[in-house]
Length: 435
Image 1 (cartoon, helix red, strand yellow):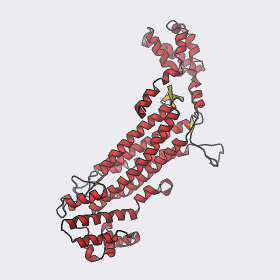
Image 2 (cartoon, rainbow, N blue to C red; image 1 turned 120 degrees about the vertical axis):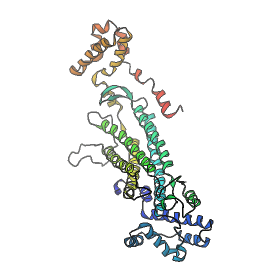
Image 3 (cartoon, one colour; image 1 turned 60 degrees about the vertical axis):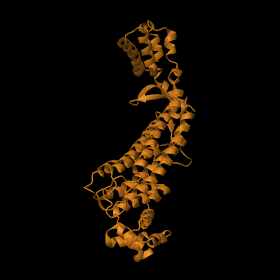
Image 4 (cartoon, rainbow, N blue to C red; image 1 turned 180 degrees about the vertical axis):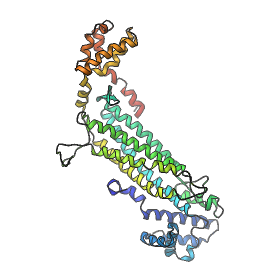
């Protein structure tokens, strides 16, 4: 991912130096286990750890790989340059390249997940804070983009909070799913390496041994992981789309914070565009772009092939780096989002009480009018508001068929805004808990 959409901590996980450090740790821990089993001399295992403070030369490894055409062999050759060929002959004993590559990839994904969880926590905190701040800030709810019935800005934030909270639970599960390692040798049979080596290496790296691998860790785990990232990205877009709508000039119920000196357009000095949330919509597409390839990686030939390898070298860093950036960008947008309650009320009242139509409909049915006739009565008065700019309540009070069923006081009562917000506390308790 390009630096523009990257944060340093996440980028560091995917740096070649980090990868080689994990490769080294896997090999060194495996040597410890092999020595304990008596497979290799303890002195040779100890010698491997003499390189624990070595800064592996990425350029040198690349140079060797240019000849060997094999990245793990290139690394092992470079490691031997530091610990000596005599001791290095015991490194990688009974292992295959995928033992190192797959276990490392999962270590990186686990570490990336921990950073993503921190980002989600920041988003959740921002949404919760703004939800309570605007719990009673009334705005119009919309379906199909059209005015429906009153809701509150707090409920909008609470809805997004609940969605992101589900995403957090999904990501925790995805972390568990991906936190396995395999040191099982060629085709995964442990023919040339004891399962105890795998158990030791995994314990040292904070992983669980893969119950059964072939020559690779099963890719359904990775498919689930990247699918989870895709869902989180879609939820980010869900919030971004709502904010983009609210910032439209003719709506202007909220807008992204516009800092001093910020410019909105090279041509039109008046512009204040929702650039951050538009950017989030685009970033969400990039994260979701990893989902289908991850699904297609599940089906590999027999005990292994490397059709998944090139895919994962790209989607691993790109999806996690992009999602990490997007989570923190979203959190910043929500934290600084400028809310306009007066505009929300003005928008809700734009069609002169029309949003109370369902209350009138229900009241007429309760008064004994059939549902079909009630609907006709309410709709014909509603259309005068849409088409002529009339006042809904005034039209109802002037309709003899309506007033034959409902008194003026009963009609007036149906326009009480508080009716629509009476269960806000109940919903908040469900989302945030009773405290």
